[in-house]
Each structure stands twice: as C-alpha cells, then as structure tokens.
Image (cartoon, rainbow, N blue to C red; front, side, top):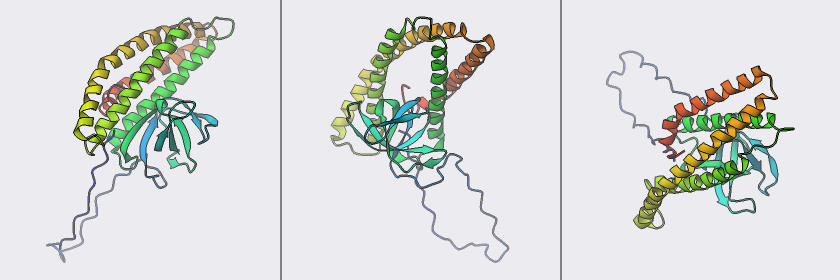
Length: 270
C-alpha cells in the first residue's frame, strides 16, 4: 500500500544565538496539498475506485455509479449476496461525505494502515490519476459499444470478453489482497508471524505467472472486442464524432501508460 507519510516531530525550542541582532527570517512557505480534503479525514485506511462502479447504501440498495479515481476511506469488508463489499466513506469534490456507502471489493484498490491524509501524494496521486483515466476510457468504450447497438448484432466477442475479464479480475483481486498483506507485514506483525509472511510471499510468487497469463488472454480478446465495437459504432456516427472519440481514447491510453511505472511501484501488477 502507499506508505504512510513519515512522521515528524517539531524540534525542541533552542535559544537563537543571534537573538537581538535583527528580525528572524520569515518561515519558509508550507506546501499546500491541492487534493487535501477540506474537512476532517474519517480516520480509516484509504482506497480508490478502479473504474466506474455501482455504489450502494449499507443495505445494498443501488444508488448509482461513481467514477474511476474516486477516493474512499474503508471501515471494513463483509460478505453479501452480491459479493464481498467494503463499507466506505466517499470523498467528492475534496470533501468527505457523511453517509457510509458500500462498494464491491473487486471494484477497488484498498490500502492497509495509512489514511488518505497520511499518505505521500507522490505515491497517492498517480494511482488516483490512473484510475480516473481508466474510468474515462471505459466510458468512451461503452459509448462506442452503444453506438454499434440496434439493427447490428451484438458484439461477437462478448462471451469471450466476459469470461476473460472475470478470470483476470479474480486473479488480480487475489494478487492485490496478497500484496496488501505483504506490504502491511513490512511494518506490522501478522497474526501468523514469519510463517504467515512466508506463505504470502510464496503465494505471490505462484500468482505471478497466473496473473501474466490472465492479463495476456484478456488483452488479446479486449483488442478484438474494442475493434469490433469501434468499427461498427462508426457506421452510426459522423466521421468527426468517431474520430474525436478515438483521439480521446488514445490520449487516455497514453496517459495510463505514462503513469503505469509509478502506479506499479505502489500496486504491483496493475
């Protein structure tokens, strides 16, 4: 997980050897975090929505969607009829919302330990930006798929795409969970001590080829799926609208690739 910002304590007051020789220099300006919340941090570990996802109330009534890159503070996880969910507080427009919500764990990157306010922005912000770009890219892909609906038959790659995505998501979720525990154990004692940490390390190593294979298979079918959707979509759009969307998609893909090294240093395998 993003490592908490290093704690610093103010040094004890020391008499100024130059006292009485003129005014002390002005304090250096304090850097302001442009993404800091304007109200108090909830005090729980933070996370981020990977891509546009359904949001629920605590009783699992669907409330709508939240975009990729939305920051949350999570209070815990629980099994439900719709799958494992995390109970969260959501930050919108730099303000923590008062009502608790629920999101599928599979739609989130969750960090252990540090709160959003404690996390180093240099580690935090690339993850948020990558997820935000992913959410926008997925919306544009959905728009392209919608444009190809109607008289044209459905995407012939839909079934393969769904199966490959489900498999990749399953492996990736386990990788995220294992790596999160390993990072936690860097600074904390696991219930099972060194034995549990060793088991986690071995599991992470075993998951690596499975993760690579699942990603490769998903990316292959995703290319076919998107190519078909975009081609058929252009038949129902003006050439300028299709070109504009294609350009925006390309820019988002390039942004994600630019951010990927920084993101992978915090969330390996993403």
